[in-house]
Length: 131
Image 1 (cartoon, helix red, strand yellow):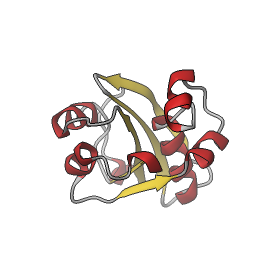
Image 2 (tube, helix red, strand yellow):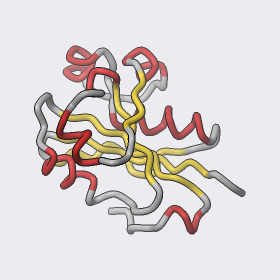
Image 3 (cartoon, one colour):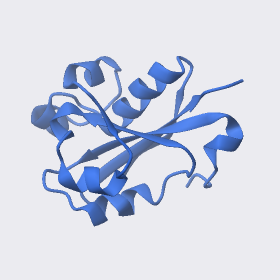
Image 4 (cartoon, one colour):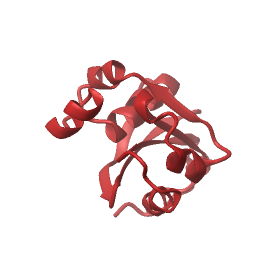
């Protein structure tokens, strides 16, 4: 697994993509986030998860950036037929992380691929905010 690093020392921000089953608990989301790099974070997901209480509670007080399923699908990440049928895009966590990170830094890259922890899927992209 990726060693924990503080993105601030690297001049960047971690964009954490989050996907989850409906009704996911705050504890489940926190458990999934605990395994990701530390540092300044931005959280992103598909618009259908924008009001998911467990996600919002786990990331509070940070905001949740949401993008449409069509926007996430256009990123072109491999994913799941089941997820595509449920939310309209085959990839939520990876696509959300990459899309929002590239809005900050067009050269942003996925660093932590799709990681499933129970009912939560997370991924992390690093967006450089200075050279």
